Length: 435
Ligand SMILES: [Zn+2]
Ligand SMILES: [Zn+2]
Image (spheres, protein in one colour):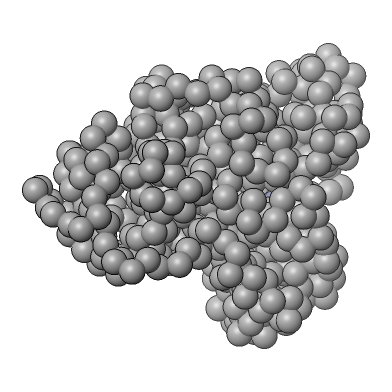
């Protein structure tokens, strides 16, 4: 987290403030003091002012699914570069997944990582721990001790759970320990291919995994969530059927769900390139699934967007698609891709996008996602008119495996503020900090 400066005061003048959680929508001034939002109104004055005329001011984005590769693969990303990438994408809060090397499955690792992110991260970073020791789907981790050590939630992300019985026990224990469970739903007896089992895979001659690999696991997880009462979050929903299943259980279980920017904007057609860059799990789906997921996000069946930011070294991605490591960078392009592809084509309103990127995930992590007076001063400043092209030189992440390389997008994050302090600044020298 950034050091607090002496004055602890910043006045953002004449931004177009948009916050679905409070209903704010219009040109106004926002005064920040002591890390919180102190005042919203007209004609405010402050000792340190930022002229935001022409910019939009949103509650900071919150990403509940990120891989910063620490510990173990700092050649791909670390807390410094991952949090800089998050800040560059307008994210003020992030949940880190535990499938690092070694895996975060013991209290001492959780407490060590919590101390490190407090020192090294530019944004608020919540540490999650494994649900099962070694992500092996056999022995449950010591969740009560993990929580005492600072774990925010538990997840075996990267893998599905081997059996329903094991998952049910995990949910019961997580519930008694007071920890939410983030689930990557994948049935590995069905997911035997490398891409979605559809037309594109057939044409390319690639082994496919059927959509049922995700749908069957999602159905199991939802049934068990309803039965156990555990707080369950289903991440990276990528099929129309899984989204519909989430809708069925929305009022029957303590369940939330997200989908990713890439499953909302890309389809299996990219598989025809055979390029390892497009390997991702769950795989890119047909247009009918993309459309179903988009509808579910628009209708609020899918509560929010999470990026599954997954940096990989070039030698793991510059391979044929069947050999490449699955995963995409996500933090830096999330807002611009969704704004360009969904909002500008009138398929999603800007306020629904903000609800999905800021308000709902902010509520889920228990802070942020609101510009209400008294809330933490976690904000994102965006220039909706700026066009930019995604390139290796624009990326702050240590890796460059973005599926949007070369794409021209509209809407760019120009400033990110966490606890009243700028952590990313493309506004010039106005904040007096360097990005
Ligand atoms: Zn996953
Ligand atoms: Zn992941």
